[in-house]
Length: 291
Image (tube, rainbow, N blue to C red; front, top):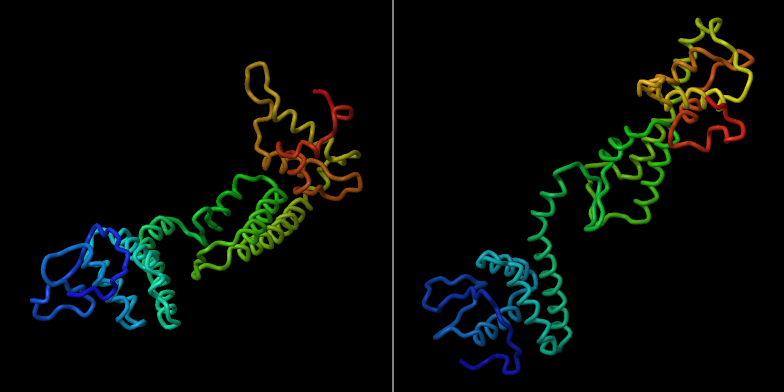
């Protein structure tokens, strides 16, 4: 049989799905080879096939052959190399369009072969979006927020996540979830409203106890610094003098003291002054109390 493409550059295929003409009903997409098999003849007939099938059949053609081989990605790589080495044969405008269509469909097929493994890994947890280098999971962010004590720290984390997301948007977005940055903004709004509500509840609860509170006539950070030092300092037996959490200390201070004018202390401000990550909020060494 004469070669259809005498100047065709051949490539090495590690798998060669083909049929013989003696088959009663060969598939439309099958590569037919008469006589002894050779890589030369396989490339010739394969190239002839991709030149003659309909443009709308390219995807089905790739599916057919990928189902015939053990390593579809490697077979697609060889086919892509065959096309690229012989790009000069796509000389007319219709053939140039066919070339573009072939390359794009090979890329799509290669991606579809990779997706099952990728999606299995990606959907092992709840994601809003992901790229090869980065994942965005609001569920993870909410879990991480639990490690922060103050409202300000939580809001700072959420704002950083929003900026990072908008500067480095993901390649793939889960349409079943709300946009990652939108969820972060909603969480900021929720935290701020929750904080105001908690303060209102605490003020209401403490109204009956207001007469028992001791007025503090000084800077609140000075008072909180004394408690912070007692929470950090250990007694001779090695135990902390005040083995309290920040939440417990905040509740004690707000229930025991009030402003000089009788108004309640702000739990948010007290928590900030007690937070180990906010040393700048406490008195400097010249004004602090040495305990």
